Image (cartoon, rainbow, N blue to C red):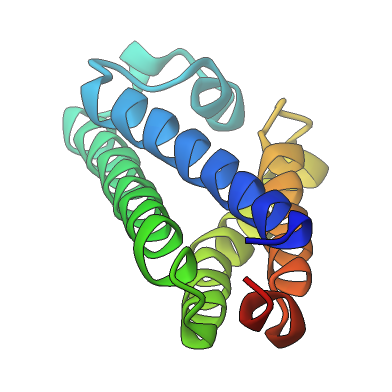
Length: 145
């Protein structure tokens, strides 16, 4: 395995680890995050119970999506990409971007319109890592194990 592929795999594993961590944190959370509360702009207890439940369920759905993204990237990195299968780099990029581009867009929009400290920068960083990992694992680097 050449150096570029090793770096690519490391970047993918960082994306997977962050995804797993965020997914587990969101799924284990017992209340909305401080960032979500800042976006709402009112005391959380003043929100109708049904609306609060809906926001909480949406947060759990995000956690689930991020966790699945992390598991998928982890598996594809450690098995087919490590074996040098070119389709794996495309799958990692597609899975990652499908999750993180919408999250980046939403977080950036909320930060710009509400001033809430949204994690747009983390989503942007993960997207950048996915692209760098993709290009480093190009066909020339995958086939020159």
